[in-house]
Image (cartoon, rainbow, N blue to C red; front, side):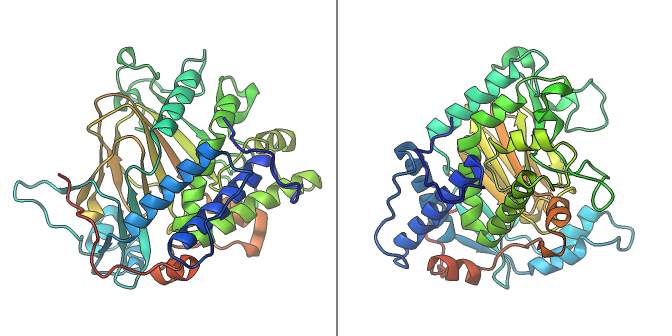
Length: 411
């Protein structure tokens, strides 16, 4: 449950979830600066509960461990972006992307991809930091809480977590990808949540954004608003991670959401359902445009083509499973993908897929929808690509490691 203590009274026009998000992001950024001696004494904020502070300190430790363990790609991120545009020589988009750069790891003698298990940062030959692998970044307590919240929502009659009928063409919803429900505490299913987005194919300027149907009590399913409220702290923690790996994107997305909320209060916000949007904002605490809850599903290799071409997504994994694996062909690598793990990546550009597991898995996939920013801020919105190492060093006083400080090979 939402764990802020009584917060400062300034910024009265900021809803409580976003206010607490900003508070935690500033605190966590100051923690990094304190650890790198750019700042002063360790920040103390009486408005953040001690259990949340412990989680934020864990994020900082894992973030700094990954920073000290860089993997450098020989090619440039921009080459990957260019390869994603148009069709070339009859090749598929994924083939074009695969040809755009040389993976950092060789195929193993048995034909498999290398398996990684240590926190790692990935950047290109020009210093663009485009991906982070962050096992252990969430606490056991957080994983257990998310498991229970999603289990409770999944057990509702006409639950917001859904599976469509067998044979559905969309693998995201088709039952074949999900675990056997008789073996699960959490009924398998998925749901997307957004405080304000455009339906697919209905972007600006000819259409208006609005809340996702999962947050509309009149839409015929149960548990969505309650699950959003339960996940307020979790979304704050995930959003705080974004403030470390990409501070500029965090600030831009926060600006978009705040503008929506302020326009709601002035009764001039161009949304389809102002009353519901205002109600949703009471519990919205993530800087992302939306997030998906995915319970007990295998995920085939795919790219998230509805997001920004260069924008970063965060995959956060919770549950009680073991043997989880995330595969990313463009890195020619697999990653241990067990509870308490986060992976930051440009989901539009990089194929990724998650295998079946022993036990139960809940993934929160947090993503961007640039159309929302474009529609709300008009010409004032910028879809930031990944930051450079220089950007992060300037923001936090970091020093780039010449050699990895930890062993990246899985034991």
